[in-house]
Image 1 (cartoon, rainbow, N blue to C red):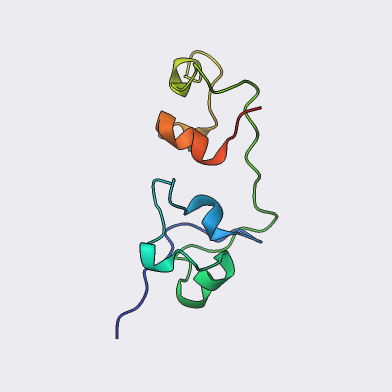
Image 2 (image 1 turned 60 degrees about the vertical axis):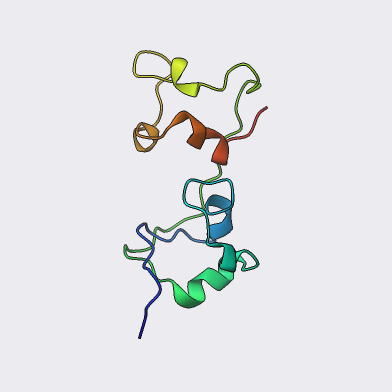
Length: 102
């Protein structure tokens, strides 16, 4: 019997999977899952790591417009406006998957 893949990250309380896994993300949901809600994901997929207590983190809005500043790493680098440790490996394109303009 084929088992659905495990989630390679902890499941946060009140997590809506589609907030991160959507057609614009780097890890989109498969096309045949497009009509599923976040709650339906958990019917088949299990977390590979233990759950994290507390509310799902809410990404902070950008403090500036994105237009003309699409290369986030020009300013958000080790020497200026440093990123949180868990964001340092992300690409510039990944920023706008969660963060929206002001």
